[in-house]
Image 1 (tube, rainbow, N blue to C red):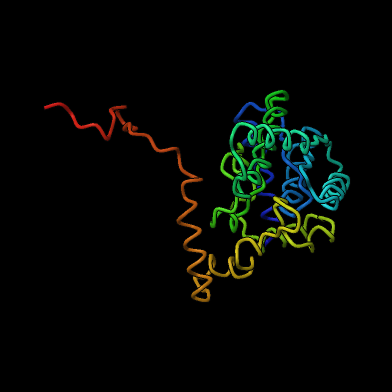
Image 2: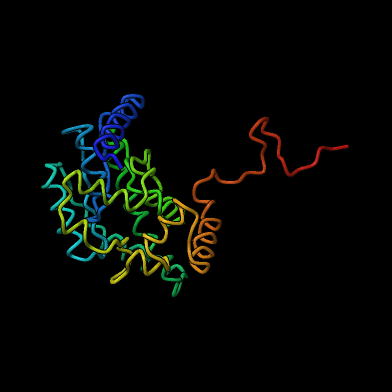
Length: 254
């Protein structure tokens, strides 16, 4: 991959998107991972000081906070810290009191990226900024994102890049080595990693997306995740026809 050409393309695209929306800048969540670090570098190159990183710990591992700060310092990006742990625990406790006892782990885990989404849009609305997402092509293909959470953004700068290409671009952009080399994690719970949760490696996933080749068990799992997650990227279903507004499921009177 020609990293210099990809960098120039995305930076130019970001500038055009901000201008076309009559926006004033870009805001994004800085998690301490490689995807958000790459987005941070690209946004800073595109918008300069009109770039804001939000570091939003929510029962997060301390190393993620350290790496988020390290990224912001490496690219001289303005950042704000919003501690969401107390808000998260208060909401979970309140919903438990309301009758949701012992929910599945993903129900509470997905609340974290949804709180971050709400926080990003609070700042975006206040500053007239656009929210830049940090999703990559590999994760998008298998639906490895939270609906109305990290998937709830205005623009997706690196959505066309496989995870392996994000790693390559990170090296080109000067992302700190310790961030590039650490195991990817969404930080949903302690000890969680992307690959252990998905059930295959990013190398296997990227190879399948690129070539269609994979071991049968891996192929079956990837295909199943792809099909099951398509609802995340489509408009909510409605009984009304988009052409004329007539309820599509209600037969006409005879």
